[in-house]
Length: 265
Ligand SMILES: [Zn+2]
Ligand SMILES: [Zn+2]
Image 1 (cartoon, helix red, strand yellow):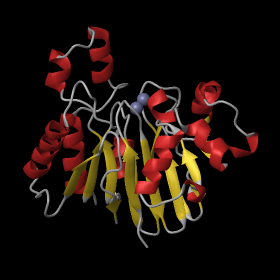
Image 2 (tube, helix red, strand yellow):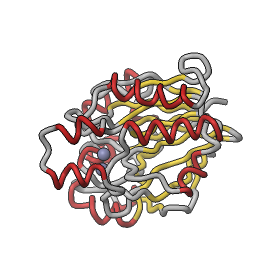
Image 3 (tube, helix red, strand yellow):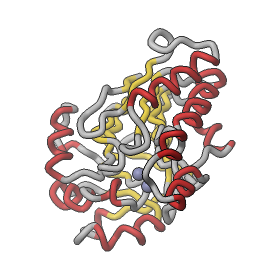
């Protein structure tokens, strides 16, 4: 049986990712409208009625704008940490209490036989998480809005063969770009986002020391990055580590507004 990761939309305009394994389909975040989510799910070949849960990583609007609608329309349970629930509840509209699920970082949980291990990220949100998920001996990860990568996060990512990882910005583009200084500093800080360079270093290390073989770069900044720059930076790091991209390692960049390539293992 396979596990898969399929981004439906990625970037500051809205994030939503479909994770699938045997009998189980999960939407991680829904920062696009209900209509857009329905369309993209249709393109990914699944009906919203078959989504088992929505897991919310954190309360930023690019991750939650469609969560309330999808939850109400299709009666989908929503999983999030207590801090995320507190911060987002007023933005979701009315939610049936029976559909509210609490999760906590470092407390693994299961949905229909697929295991999820949420881990804390240092992103500037109330209680943000990333996710490792597994079915049998197959592991995948969703690691965006990271801020920084601790040793603990690195170790959790080691067994993952497929992963979506943040390549938010090109440091030179960010520094030369139009953002005010305080915003530049926030993005570059440990509470912001991973740059192409840091993403490349992380991917190279995971390829060399772990099982990573299929990589989806995601959450690219519109103003401070281009898909080409992100791809080239990470490709270069992986090749410097002695692996060939395209051959041994598959590397993709998530589409901003539509369904991307699906990583399947
Ligand atoms: Zn965020
Ligand atoms: Zn985000």
